[in-house]
Length: 341
Image 1 (cartoon, rainbow, N blue to C red):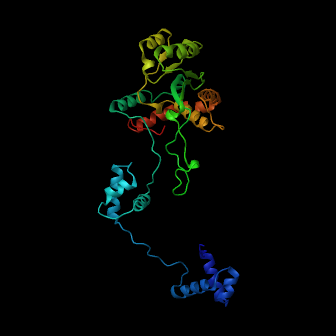
Image 2 (image 1 turned 120 degrees about the vertical axis):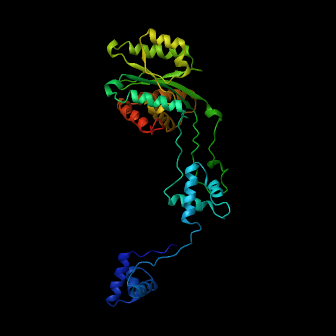
Image 3 (image 1 turned 180 degrees about the vertical axis):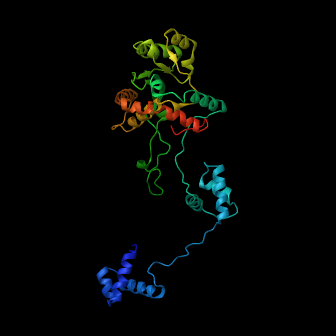
């Protein structure tokens, strides 16, 4: 059982009570401490004039400050290294524990955190991203609200989160309640297409099979996009955005869009952080995973996606589309690199 520590106020109260003539046992009975605790505190006060605990040496450090700085240089070069790998690379001829490595990193303000995943950017990708953002840095909301953002996304029936952890005792890894059962390829998936703008949200469409240019025209552009665009006067006709996927850039699709007076927004490849529709896919995925009871079939998953799509409000969409200037500025500040979006 852990001993109760005396607060500084209680310690001075004990000194005051003893100064008035109270005995050690009387003070102990009144405050609920053993009389030896009272006597040691009074003796310490007589010797030092203070009531605080004396400094304790503790276990001596096994590494110097210079060696600790060497560890930080290693972690800056190899930030994905485990504590075991770091221990071997840091001081290979010393007997150190991985706990020591983690303690030194923690003392330096570092901790193992979730890795952020982003598409691989080449120099050409970065150059095109920067040029795209510089050309639109001065756009105001009146211009951005004409953009209709489109994208496709695939949702797995059973999502396996690699960051999942389980609280368990030692040697119980194979206890059934501690095992997360999985199925190959997530049990199947449903792929959908969506389109949003600052002022509207078009119908969500399920993609059957592999997406081709012909399917893209017949199932998305003709019945959804062009029909919606034709309801706008030519002077205020929206601008359509897609992400340069191969079906989007087939000759038949390009000709179809030109023949129907659909203006497209040039798009820098590998730039999902510039598309506000990605936020919608994220919130749909979170809502699907939170469903109780969870979806069990692909048909249930498809129905849930369409249902949750309808629940996305205009206020949420406007919050995402209304921040395009911040996104553009973030890419410019990041020198064409990654952003927090």
